[in-house]
Length: 322
Image (cartoon, rainbow, N blue to C red; front, side, top):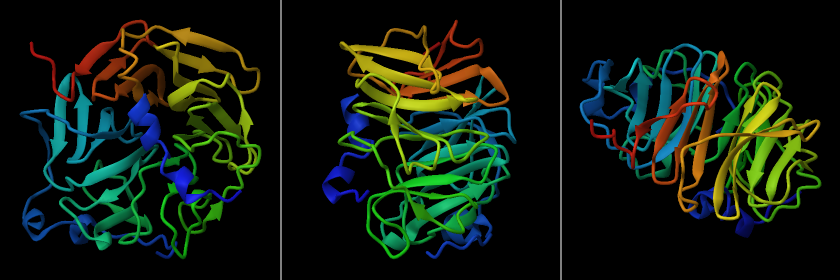
């Protein structure tokens, strides 16, 4: 299925407003830093002030016990009731996916303005100290990327034509070495949206759209609508099930669905104005009682008991006053 340029203008950015060669070479973060940053020793330190302007993803990497938040000024971490940040690699991360060995991300170098400042797709297995190239370094950065937590599957939505990727959804099942364009048969929504990948089976994906959730068991080549046609602003897998947020009748909901049976359950959440929809969802694959979500105005909530009780960690991107 060929995705028109006009459609790509609505790729998840629209959702949030309303609600290289493919080589697998490895490189330390040194070449991805400015000269000033090269002189700074990497440390994870307690953050003195949290004031996040843009959140571009959240997750629970398997090599840490913290909630990671990808922002336009680097990765922030919430661990043991404390906010932490890195002294280096404070880049503009435009997308983020936690995986069992660390995290995969995209974006651009801090204060980068040229196309060559693009990170492409990079991975860190040492809590952000170094970034290893996966693909497209210096060529592309992706706002919409997803990966299998335990596997080697990576998906991106490409919004700019290039020699390596077609417009639309592209995927790799070998950690970025080779790429294929998803055919998106039976996809009837008028916009693309956030992609979630089954943590244990990289062939299975789901996509949130303004017209519901579309589900695929063959890398997005064929898609099936598994919800009513309401707006879905965020989703993530919990095992083989999907946790998602919808906007229905000017109310924000958090639900779980079994893609096979269609059976749904509703989770309780704090009141959210319908103009402040949920933008990102995360579940700890090693503890599915631990959930987190962000909102359009950069609120952050976390639960350690499957949504029975929520703690407001950020309000408008800032820590709440004590």
